[in-house]
Image (cartoon, rainbow, N blue to C red; front, side, top):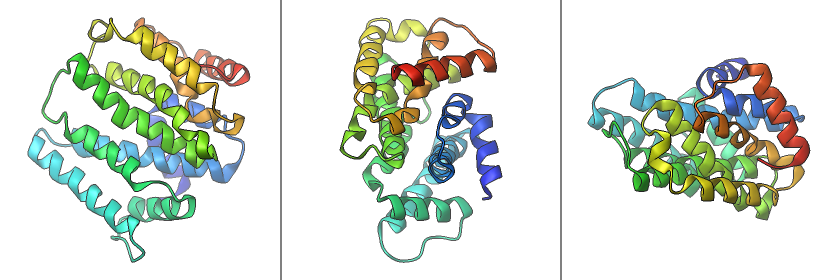
Length: 230
């Protein structure tokens, strides 16, 4: 996939994280981040293109097997995104188990039209949390990367709200703690890795049912970046 094609996919499917990626000044770092987000979007597409949980699981299993190939030293199946992901993972030495979390978290909730609090938080941690740690590693956070997990969990909650599989009342008892943890841990990331969690600053609007303009979101992300807080 060409860089422009990857960017189009991320911009269409995950506008919040796409906007946050604009905060990354280094072109290679930004391209790597978008490749990671495009993989996440492809896992979503594997579920959305079918109404059958079994078919969706087979599609996700295909990617699980691709990750096993990427973890090795040999060739990887001839799929454009799989090839680009392989190059990224091997060059950045990204942990395969965190990439597998993105798949396993989705498989655990296949066929569920609505999620209760326990399942929603498990999904948000596996998909959002692990995804944010991977993004932080991609942006050079090193040993500080696990601090991205709490903000990633909050972004995962935002994704679930956006998809309509939970409503704000589902997490009424825990959203305050999740938000506080996100704010505290995001401050522990190095400056260059902050864009990996910046989109968490947009979740408050989702919780309140607001739909700010793209310009308003850009301003909020820029202010979050200046403050180093979500």
